[in-house]
Image 1: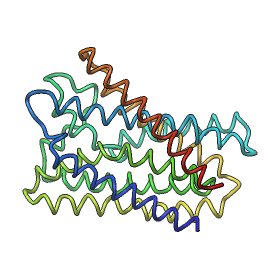
Image 2: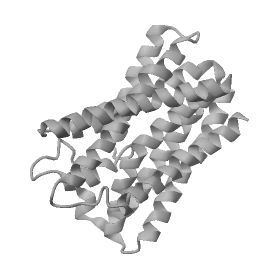
Image 3: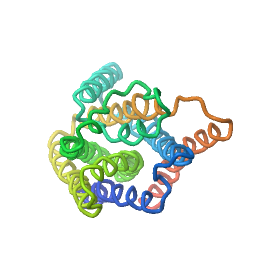
Image 4: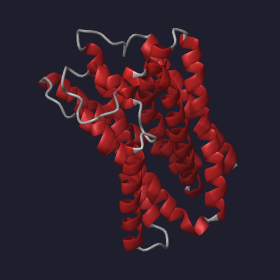
Length: 276
């Protein structure tokens, strides 16, 4: 039962986020334009994703981990090691690489917020393969994190899958935009990114096998999952929101950040009611 739930959730998060990203782009909500509207819409998505990731980490994954038998000092050390580990992955450009493709293009001249990954635009043909390789690694890791949460509790797994889906939407928007630069076949770009998203399910199966066989270490797996969510939210998403905006745009960011937190809370409450 747990494995089936993991497969459903990982496929929904991995492939569903790709199709949702493509749907938003087709609807014109995130098409690039000179009027600045697309930039604000994209940032609302980033705010939503940041809120969902932080709520999942601080309100669900970490509390669940600290309810186990592991000591607080060991868990905090694991959290620190996890943050450093994902920082190193980020340096290797293998963890999260999709947000900057879209948002560097949307930034006003000279405001890239410290991200230096624009090489995909300078070498678009190589960049397409780099995107797919990095996306596959990223999705495999997401699958392991979702599986860890499901092994602890089905409700926690559903919340983790929702958080992954929320932050993968802006991620995949960037992937699709880069791949569409390398090929005019939009359907091929969608298929390629969807296949990369499907690797989430493979990560889910591997994660289920690892965590199920090492159940005593489940609190540590949950803390590692938390560290990845916290790192993506604070090191990638939030910095892209730190810019001078109008009062209305700033309020919109705050609204969508709170909406992400509320969404995670609602899904948690809903799944808890139906699990009783």
